[in-house]
Image (cartoon, rainbow, N blue to C red):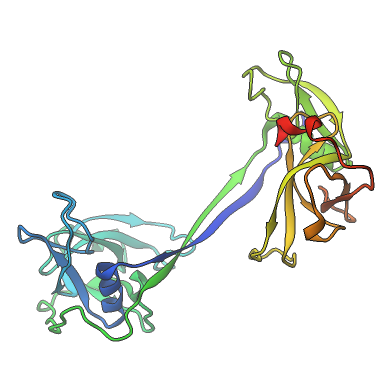
Length: 313
C-alpha cells in the first residue's frame, strides 16, 4: 500500500481596504474608548454601524453614541481557542446588544466557564491597553452587574481619523494530493516529471489530476515528459512576497514541458528579466535535496515557433 501523502498548507492574504465615513468614525471611536452606532430613518440604532440600511438600502450617516455595557442575546462556548482569536483561554462567543443599540455586536466574553454564561446576562467592554482603531480595541467583554455606562457625549468627530485597515485572511488546512498527484510528487523526488494520458483525447496532463479536464474521464497511464520545455507566457513580479527569499524583479511563467499538453508554473532564472520572452526554451535547475525544480533557465536552443505552443498560452 503506497504511503498517503499529506502536508499542512496555509493560504494567507492581508487584505487592505479603505474606510468610508461611517466605518472610519466607528473604528476611530473604539480607539478613543467610544462605541458609535448609526441611526436609520425609522429610528433604529445599528451597532456595528453600516453605510446602508439593510432593509431600505438608504444611505446612512447619522452617528450616535451607545453604551459600553450591554446584554447577551445569545452565546456559544469555545473550548479550544485558535491562533488569532481574542483570548488564549476558553471563552464564550457572544452577541451583545449594547445599551442604546437595536442590533447585537459579536465578540468574545471572558468567563470562567460555560456555567457562568447565560442569555440575558449583563456585560461590559474591556478595552485593550493599546488601541489603534480596530475591532481588537475591544479586548473582550466581561461580566458586569453595575449601572449602565455613562456616555461621553461624542458626536463621532475625532482628530487623526482612521482611514484604512489591513484585514488578515488566513486558511490553515491539511492537504492530501491523491493518487495522481502523489505519483507526480514522488517522481519529482527522482528529478523526473510524470503526467497522465487521457484514454479518450490522448492529451498528457502535467501535473496530473486523475481525470481529463476536457473529457472528464479517469486517467491512469503515466507518461514521462520534459525535462526541457517552452515558456508559453509569463509575468514580471515587482512586489516581494512575505517569507520568500527571492529578490525582485523576477519572472514567473507557464512552462509547457516537452510531451505535455498542459503548462505548469515555474520561476525563470539565469537570464535578465527584461530579456525573457514567449517561446524561450528552458530546463529545470535543481538544488541539493530539493524535491522540485528551484527555477528554470534558458537552454540556449532557438526559441520555439509560436504555432507549437499557441494552444497552451
